[in-house]
Length: 367
Image (cartoon, rainbow, N blue to C red; front, side):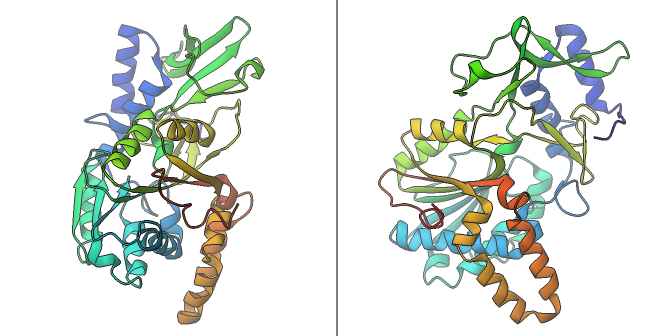
């Protein structure tokens, strides 16, 4: 972690709030840093790509988006039985790189582009501006919104590295019992981690809560709004969703709250409003919430298993043959996506579908 601290404008605002009201929760801190109206990270800048702070899988290789596009077209054709209209939705589409590549590949499935309307759920106007330029000539109607359910079903929903930025709550087990982890101010007038009264709520999903050692941390995103949105959409018509993110499938007692700036890690308290904040997704908790909302779940599987089941190696091989001068670059990028102990296993994939739909592509073959 980079030790340097920056006295950002948002840091001063946060300190003022702490002085007047006491320590703030990790969830509140994360929300303010990412979405403050004036100084929030996503509100003020394009953040993805070589010139930004981080890159997503879609920025690593075009093959990623192409695989997702073909998956979407097959879901429309074989799982949903080719309805006359379908909304292809992306939550948190970044620069729309994945959607651009997805639509280019999906054209090979007859009728898909004629049936498709694209809808992007985006809170950042800076990113929405980039998305408009990227998808200007994509071949189908495109709309934007900020509501998780602001579009029509049948719908195919894509969420790549979306839930990792949902604010988390943290609790730490101390010698005196459970305390909520919070952000306060130390004797040097700097932001610091502290604790405040607050045991984990009874609905926190962690089957090994009692086994948490002293000093261990329990995290919860509790993305109920996300699960509720997919439930509402499925009531209007068939829904299939693909969720890809870094995270874990078994309970853990470690701190996954992190910050990335200029492609390097730093303390989450170092540059409020000027670094990307995220946390690993608890896929166990997510699956329970989605199941509780009446939806069927496929997976989770690792990203390597999912992409492998859908033929990423074969597609990359064809791309290398068509572009021999870029063969080494293509091979390296694809290897990064499926690397063991790297993106291939750190990232997990879960499929979500209306209860009446069959198992989604990429999951049965991957187990």
